[in-house]
Image (cartoon, rainbow, N blue to C red; front, side):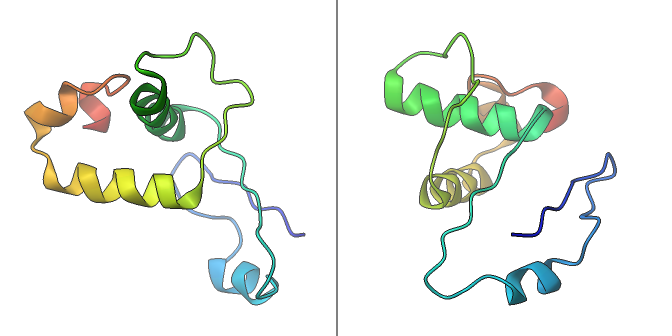
Length: 93
């Protein structure tokens, strides 16, 4: 499976269309996220599941549907409301 890397600017080095074209209909690719935004999102998902912030996110996994649900929830919140969430810094709100 092709691997793509997210650059600091937030752009995929390879076009997503090329990657999506190589994914079979029954295939469930796994993505690996590191640093900043994805860790903040993982913290929120973990907090909602476990009731507290985990000490470490090493090896933590969540589904696309959990991520999609969180993103939809975040869209509805104001910046002050987002800042109340665990793991969200002011620059990520």
